[in-house]
Length: 161
Image 1 (spheres, helix red, strand yellow):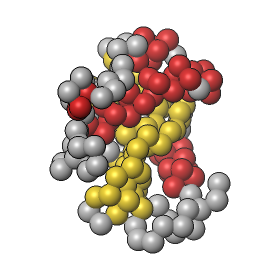
Image 2 (cartoon, one colour; image 1 turned 120 degrees about the vertical axis):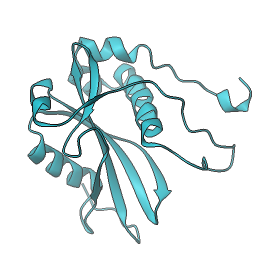
Image 3 (cartoon, one colour; image 1 turned 180 degrees about the vertical axis):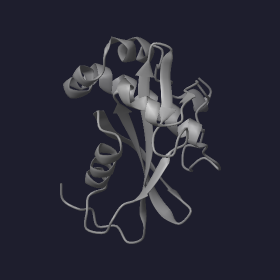
Image 4 (tube, rainbow, N blue to C red; image 1 turned 45 degrees about the vertical axis):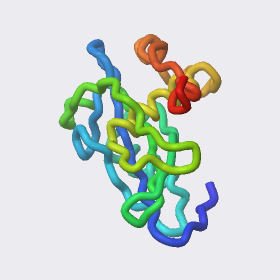
C-alpha cells in the first residue's frame, strides 16, 4: 500500500484477540492492553501493523482498522488483530467483556475514551464485517460468528433512541 501523508505522529493501537472455547481473550505483546506502535514515516500503517504483528504473533488470521481518533498529540488508528488460538500461551491474557460505548454529541468527540470502549466499537464493527465482507467471514470460525451475533448496531442511541 502507499504510505499516507499525515503531518505529525501516527500511532497504531492494536487490539490482539484470540478465540478460545471460553470466549475471546485480549492478548499480545503488551499482554491484556492495546499494543501501541508508532507508524514509520513513509510506510502505510496497515503494512507496519501487519509486519510487526505477523513477526511477533505468527498465526495472524485477520487484521482490520476499525476507527481513528486524535489523542495525546497524535492520530491514533485502532486495529483489530485476530490471532490463532494456539499462540496465546506466549502472552498474558484477559477475557473480553461487553462495555458501553463512549458517547459524543452530534458534532463533538467524546470527552474521554477508554481502550475497552474502543475494543467494544471494534467488535461491533467486526460483527458488521462478518456479515458483509467475504474475506472476514471466511477468516473467522464458528465461535467468532456465534459471539458476534450478540454485537448489534445501536443507531441513534445517543439521540434518545
